[in-house]
Length: 296
Ligand SMILES: Cc1cc2nc3c(=O)[nH]c(=O)nc-3n(C[C@H](O)[C@H](O)[C@H](O)COP(=O)(O)OP(=O)(O)OC[C@H]3O[C@@H](n4cnc5c(N)ncnc54)[C@H](O)[C@@H]3O)c2cc1C
Image (cartoon, rainbow, N blue to C red; front, side, top):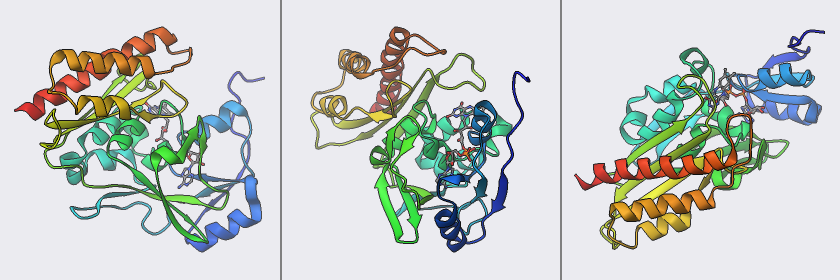
């Protein structure tokens, strides 16, 4: 027996219209799997030794590979847009830098030519790198079915490891991000076992922006991965940070609270106690860097 068995057999269909997708979904039910770049799927097929009867490639559907931006609607990224296209898009770089930074930490360059934001989000891995940044930019998923379009927040979309709110007859069409507040600065910090091509032990995204209506004069948004069943925000910590003028001690307190809230599980990449400490350190570093930029 091979230590790493080859791929099981499956049929491959490249969809050309949404109607074709709806019909195949209705006909094949759970025996159908949707695909973008396949970089999560093929590893799962190989490792588990099972594949669905039919793999339905949605990359060719109209609009799936497009990115659009304007200051009214923000950034809309088709589910099939590869990560390298996001991190080199001028408007994404200008307004959503932390998302581009997160995209650039995934695997390696060749992988990022295939891997998509849509796949990263639908795979719903707790360690997915795009998730913390997608959360701080208030990302929403645009889901399509024969019943029409449904738009929900990422917080409502992720239900647990590998679990989403996607119905059996729906697919992800695009992800939309509103224009960030004026003067926003963002960062994604990732700790992996190596600098190249490893999943996150901890990933933290912070977005900060001036807000003269708060005692702090600014607001932070904090997103984390790898330390709970899904990626998550820290609304209470964010709220507290806006309530007092910022200093180093307050940032340290916020980072300690982030550590206390995080709930990692022991895995092959790190112990839970190490992950918790890294939540504190990365959150502090990210807050400090963004605070320094906003203060200027
Ligand atoms: C060597 C290697 C290194 C990696 N490194 C990282 C890393 O550092 N960080 C990281 O976050 N990930 C990493 N990954 C995982 C993977 O590359 C990413 O999660 C990637 O973004 C998945 O995108 P994809 O387009 O390949 O998804 P796919 O594999 O095509 O799909 C992923 C899942 O989403 C579902 N899906 C896809 N599209 C849709 C849709 N439109 N509607 C509904 N469901 C859909 C699929 O059915 C599947 O369950 C790595 C993978 C490999 C093989």
